[in-house]
Image (cartoon, rainbow, N blue to C red):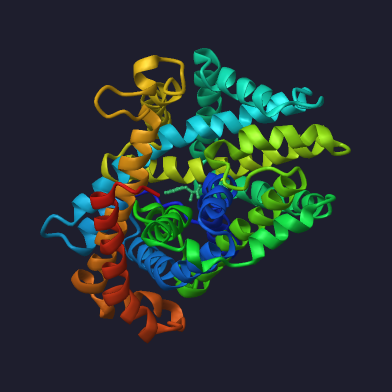
Length: 457
Ligand code: PFF
């Protein structure tokens, strides 16, 4: 007797994959991280380098991941196993799933802050003039408050879990169809407000005038690392989302849209942040605290500041949510495909695991002293997670995926998959050259660079 094999869930519409994958890519990396990293690394010169890496490295690796996923119709572990049944390649999939749960845990801590700041701003916390010291004080009190940071971590993971429990077409796709247009609308409204502030010009000049003297090895590694992280590459998120993609879709076109959209949002985020900063005479190299510490001092000074401030933190929270959804989905797909769990318990189990792992990260900003500065390592727990997973593991994963697709599986297999359903493999020769030669060499080089110099991105 034949087993009642469940049909695998799939995107319900052509735009479903592009919106969900763009939602995964567009996240805190674009709106929180990209502007301050750009500010610290020479403004426009860094942006040029970044775009180059998206085109030469990010786009080819994205195509590689989506092709693997669609061909195998499996989570990352199952996908490597199916294409290369012998050997240890499936371990690359395991690395991805483990990295996914780890990134989900600490990423949700910061995502929780954005949600907390959304609530704070909504209720008028930033409606009166603040000195920079007061703003730092508010931030430190917030992130070192154990119940507050763990509570918001919980809320954020809960939202993520609810969406993922709904499945692909009636969960993730349904939600990204609402959240992505909302994100775009907020981004456009806020950017228009920022560039029309008095004194915005100086910010635009800083952002648009390249200073190539700032570009050194560190900036190059930063640009490539940021491109991989921002495009959600190196841990199988795109393998997983690609596994739900229909055979009629053109993978090159779909991946192209995702890369374009992700880069567009990052570049626009610069137009949102820099004019606002410069209009207040503030420092563009403000670092990670930029959006939580510096921006709240600006809101009280502009008309309808509470409205725009609330919109800004809502924008961050929405961007983060569509990313945490993809992080959780990678691990859920693994449990569903490989361990035959049902989706709902798998989502609950994996998000609970992320919650437990996230607790020490949430307490590492003053909540618990030793977690905030780990003995001998000297870093906070969240920073350590970000360096080992966001830097080392994603870079290693992207390197191995490029080698796997370029050499182990091989170009013929990729070509057959891309051309399935009569699709054209645009830029096939260029892609082949990039994935076999340029991507492995460039990604290996920055991997060595961060290992040797400990100059993380
Ligand atoms: N791309 C997301 C960002 O830029 O914030 C982060 C991320 C999401 C990385 C999902 C990796 C991933 F699988």
